[in-house]
Length: 395
Image (cartoon, rainbow, N blue to C red; front, side, top):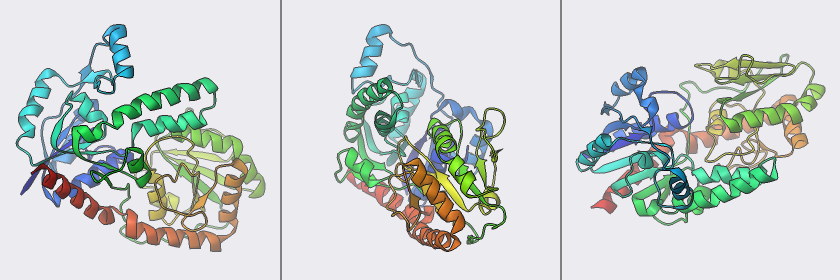
């Protein structure tokens, strides 16, 4: 049986959103390849409840809790900024004892699967034999979008410089790991392409019961789901409220904007007329079923948005910026509506609320593609193939 050491940035059965969902489902797919042992490497790994939930499904090892590291003064700052081989870039790292424990461990496994680019640096280990690096996003692509869309010239200039420097580090991933995976073909091309870089898309869990698109006509709603304290989410919602929402309220009397996600409620959440911040909702299916459309107004960020796959899985028609739908092979008017300019974005929302025939057709097309391409069951064979490829290359 293939023995797999799974290095995660926190417990896979911790928080149920974004990268944590990917961590959980990648881990489950790896269990179909061999015996998986989870080692969490994060300050969040001291979450006892998440550790116990993970231990109920996987074999687990005592976590590694990184500690703050000295800055090293000006020489250290310059090295972190300009040396592409510097691993001391996060301000924290594993202790010498934990690094020694890891070194003793890795030789016992046929495959080491590492989740995200931060984890190997926290462990201060450059070369990873028999290893795969799984990137749910490529960090410098976030900076690239800030360099393109930042509000101030100085912000854009700084982001472009940081993006170039970080990208130099990312191009060395192929030297450090046996194989790599990213979430989209554009990200693969960005890292140089080649046979050792694979695409494992983001996905969402298939509902137990097939949903239907039938929002109440007499209570029009559109909605957003996401962690509001995450800067791209907050920026997108504020942009929508400022630039799009007045047009919708004028065109559709009584429409409401519903916001799901931690920090969307309370005084620190987004404010506005006819806006309801619901906060964290454990099971949002019933709420989303009342929406005529889901908005994904993302203007900067990296990787692919799980919001897209979630909208498809709920049969909720989506209106997204093109960056919000980055990495998904979709067409405007077929699986969703795409718009970058405020007037066009608002008009797309209006059309989906008013034209239920169009909205239903979009929801059905999106659902069909979701079943074929973006459920975790559909993605699992790609994980199997990548794991087996890495093991073969290591023999």
